[in-house]
Length: 312
Image (tube, rainbow, N blue to C red; front, top):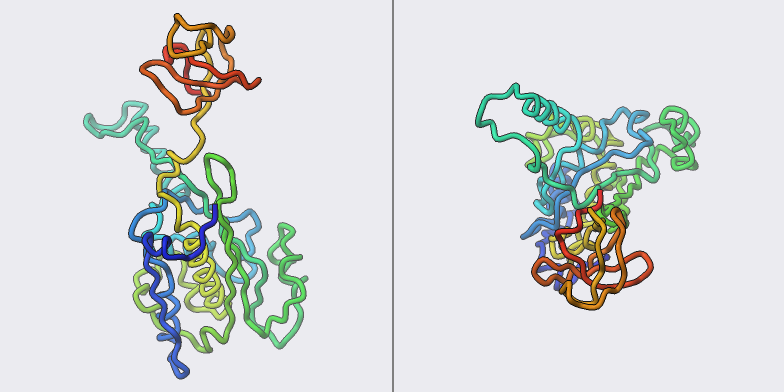
């Protein structure tokens, strides 16, 4: 579901836009772009960032954009950021120690504590160029980057220092692409000889994004992703923030043979017998221990929750 930036969205987050002055310094221009990142008044869900398979940043001397997008997410407060990278790998090591009995008593580390991701954010790039004397180097960049991404950067005059990026949000439960947004950045947005500490982001230099700060192509990629992220949050601003409740109910299967009844009682008319292992789809209606379900043939009725288990 996509929802534009409307009055309804305004209730979900506040956008602060600062128009650039004609003679603004590079530091001021960058601060203005930072101010465009939306600040949400409530979380839109939990989010994990996943880098794309084509490592387009390697040929440009940049770090993975994953770290860059994490900075945006943390600054905006629009999502609860989950770690599915190196930090998560270390956390899994700790869990392995706990399950093996190696941790001290009272460590409170075990099953059922990890938050589920509602959405996956994938940062990709449509086109990019570095710095040269107007040469068309799409093929050269493609050779450095590999992974078949060369076609995305062909016919680019690298003297223009521009970047066109795309952000995609995928709903983990339904696999739907919940939102997609493009962003554009160019050297005219940042000027030349950029330096300094990114305004209020000076402390993020060690977060794996310093080369985005200190290189010309890195700067325009940052601006492009800021624009794309701002649009993306606008598209998702109408969501309730409870993706789990909005998703279809998880399927169940019969843990033992039983029956589907026309109403919530074992005295009711039998709709059909049910074999152990049969898949059923809850409608969401419940009456005590009874769940209303449908089978794969469209039959609808009630089963006891004592006879079903969540499908794995």
